[in-house]
Image (cartoon, rainbow, N blue to C red; front, side, top):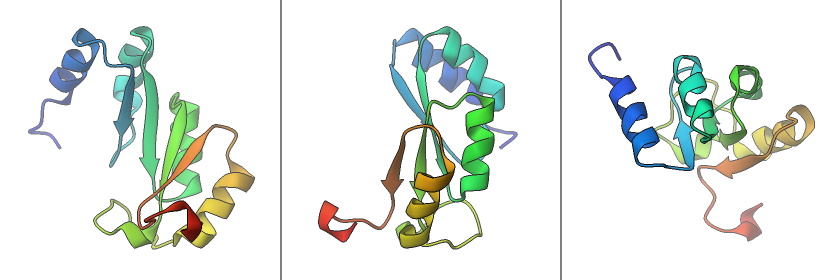
Length: 108
């Protein structure tokens, strides 16, 4: 992560007046103040509710809960959507979306 200039990405998002940003893979804390000051809503992708709660404390407006079925996600908890989404409903106080491994609403 050290070789990537994430701050430049954030600057472009702000300059282009993007309204919503999804962050993932690491805590978004170093970028939240700049994004919030620009009026941008932040959705943080998480694979556990523990990480989701931390992101909310940092200032995330919503969470994308990414179940193990999606593949290719960061994290090693291997929690499937059937369990993870129920935990999200019980444990989160912000809006969240089910992400990863769901083809249509009937699967929920």
